[in-house]
View (tube, rainbow, N blue to C red):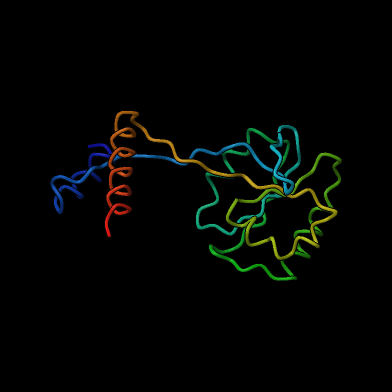
Length: 156
């Protein structure tokens, strides 16, 4: 039995009519601190993550970049001056003219208070999107979501 079928069976045990759709993370084009799309192909990356499972992101970038140096923090990490100094040191120690600090969109927001320390560092983030496995399920999901929102907005 497939993993999807096992998940569906578990849900069906509790709810026979629930809409069940399967989706996955889709990595979008990286964006620099000025809001411009960038290309990481051939660049040396210092990847900064504060997420639970960074390996899929590392794997994704492996084929798109020249090299990756990963600085990993625990999920929901609150960055400190010491962390910023570590990131800056790694960036400046990297002997490459095509280098960048890349992070997740979530961690980019957490790094914003330290933007002054990043003025001499190329900082960018990798946004994510959501893709559905089945386009028909996607349409049904969007329709139900739209209807639920419309119904809640129209209630007094």
